[in-house]
Length: 115
Length: 114
Image 1 (cartoon, rainbow over the protein chains, first blue to last red):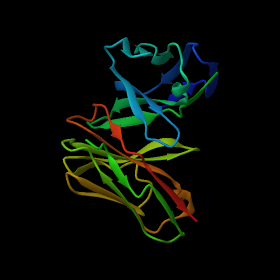
Image 2: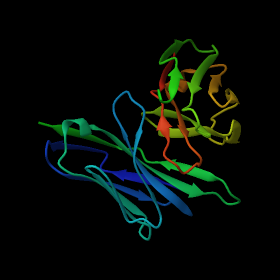
Image 3: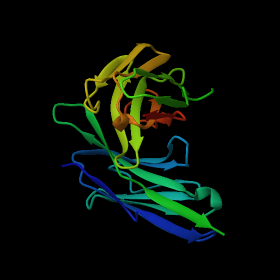
């Protein structure tokens, strides 16, 4: 069964600190992996999209890594800001037998950045 | 561009009533997606369209749910009859050219079925 598991479920850090969020998946065959940021009451916003051939991709203070062999991804946030408080969702695209695509969603990591 | 537009933003209805959610994708985007988000199940893809044609509706939970895209600038998600367990936030998203491209989400419609 295709699954995406994220950890930790929630996290509280002090402003200015770094943090790393984890995503493990069992989706196969794999197409790409996306990280989204979702502020409370808003729609998700894409941070990064990585294919199986990409190991790392950055978007400002956000850096995502991917190890397609171990089926693990991480999202590293550098010098956190209060505005980073949000839910971070990992989404994996898989390829269906016979063609077509399938998205499998993680349940998200709730990050809170405090003063 | 105004981004993906959804209406209404909030909907409160009684069990058994018909509910219609509306979405206007970003102009020029070929793909349109409908999602549902709840605390218990997280984000779920319900259905997606390519060039106004439904491609995969395997995520639609029941026959009570239906979606249409009569043209490139408008889509609807209808629930008839609605039930309390349909209460959720429904998002519409669009993306250009490919299923694999970045998806741009609308602000969502918060549906409450009493």
